[in-house]
Image 1 (spheres, rainbow, N blue to C red):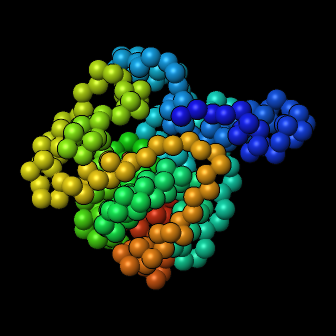
Image 2: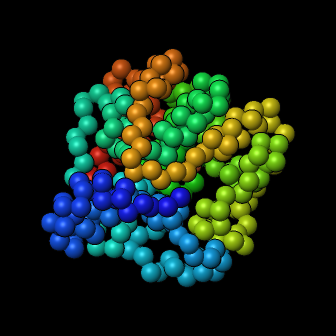
Length: 270
Ligand SMILES: [Fe+2]
Ligand SMILES: [Fe+2]
């Protein structure tokens, strides 16, 4: 994965447009291009850090790595943006468009799952599996499963919840290797936490092991600034399997409605 200069220039409107930009505008544009901390980490060519080196970086940041993407502008000096208002009765599509966007990672994962002929419950799990990172990145699989449990098939919620644990454990039977991204994020000598290990041991004997494993297999990282991935190919699957509350997500008084409200209005002070 690499950034091509011509791709960056093209997304900014061409050489002439770039020539007219001052350095602050260029820095903002680059920040938008590398829209998340994750993208920057993925592009790194540095050797993998140790766990101790990862910890040493904590007091160098003005935010914590586990914070939800909606809640912090991660580049030093960057500002968060005013969010588009949500409609009165927000649907899953409104959240994708106005709060999860660009959501390229999950859309690409779902597209890969569809191409690979996965069952619809798994394609839906791939589509939703990391969307809770808008709210919270730490333990994101567990947050996401909770957020979606009232609205999706049980197996989809199971797959979303446990993809996070299975990401730490290779499985040659599925051609799944431990990701380099995790060596970079957690340190090359990182040992998964006890709850992750315990869930892995539980999953190995579980009849639904394949469900979260297939999410990890289709968990797809790519950085293509020209890729325009739409949610349209998944509308039928969403229509068949996602129980959209008629009052709108966040307004249905479900046990997780507050999670959706928090994503809808992350600028509320309290
Ligand atoms: Fe994930
Ligand atoms: Fe993912």
